Image (tube, rainbow, N blue to C red; front, side, top):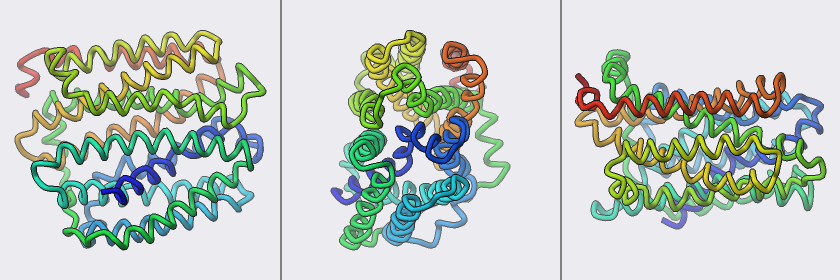
Length: 379
């Protein structure tokens, strides 16, 4: 399990490592902040279509085979990333990395679910989810810290070396069973989407990760806007609120039970999510730092409750139901990490936040309609 945790942390570190460096990369390559933000967006693109396409590609491999190939290629891509002098090539490399991510994440989840004792699966999945959150935090923190000390290229050198070590460590894993993947048909996709309760959860998931991705991706530019002397290390530390997500993810079931169910947990989480968002209009980096703890904690409470709810409503076709959940989640990230930047550039930070609040309110209203028993029953 230690190797799985290590690879999980590195995979999510690779997804988010460029974020605190976006202002530096924009200046280094002479591109706009909207263009720099695309370094995150292009990674989400393959993740948003993976449940619909990757089942045909991944069905012939064991989790270990998939992991070793994908992790090795990811390591090599990080070495290339640190050497290039063209922003277009950087974008191409990030897209390539994004294409590797569904293979890595599918293999990790398959390995955890198939190689863990039945009575330990919930505990193992909780550890896995915590590892994904920790990876998102450490990727940002460490890339910012290393860039402040040695320059941004060294951040990706260290990440590449760490991934290469992971490739060798994967040789210690048992081969595992062949991956069980989804090969969806259009009629099955439409059948799931016609169920109102599923669709409303998917819309909510799209909304909250759209907003979350927007804040996480444009946060570095806001920090440098408020304090032009802010270092990459300081920007990396701004993501510390991410750690609170570990606790809300682990205790989400208990919180949901205390509140009276996952829908109430989602409503409460979205309320505090929007409240933290509104507070971010204040032009103070310390306030922003504190609010990010509430923002991230609320996000992962909603995420955990929503994923649990959609599974509890799925008596059949669980693979497709979960696959579409992931697709909507990362589609929200793909659009959220880029489109709101247009409003930020044209109208400023306050307008950017107001637009995001409207999207949160839409998600909140969507969850509120799930109170209807008829919708829960799909009638």
